[in-house]
Image 1 (cartoon, rainbow, N blue to C red):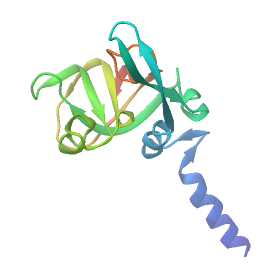
Image 2 (image 1 turned 135 degrees about the vertical axis):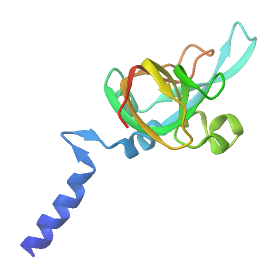
Image 3 (image 1 turned 30 degrees about the vertical axis):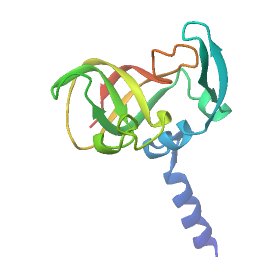
Length: 146
């Protein structure tokens, strides 16, 4: 029984390293949002505004490592600014395959080469619930991990 407890505790600790989530769990955490309708003076109608959960708010300003796919803004080349998605290009938010919580704006320190395979990046997370011209998640000072 003691060995079983040790194995279970070890298995549970694999997902959490020093109180930080694994890269696979970050997208799950970022999905914990709701929306409220607010009137936008500039547009002249109500728009959906994200309401971030406490779990998401706790990630703001933190350096996170996240795995996903580069969605190029201009052509398939190296980029310092691009959209990063939890899903490949053909399944991402912009193709109607997922919600806005599955993408983020990325501002990298150095250009990151476009690939069709998933990559890992690391950067500082910002939350956006007020600028409708920007995505709700922004990752700054981004570096390629793998």
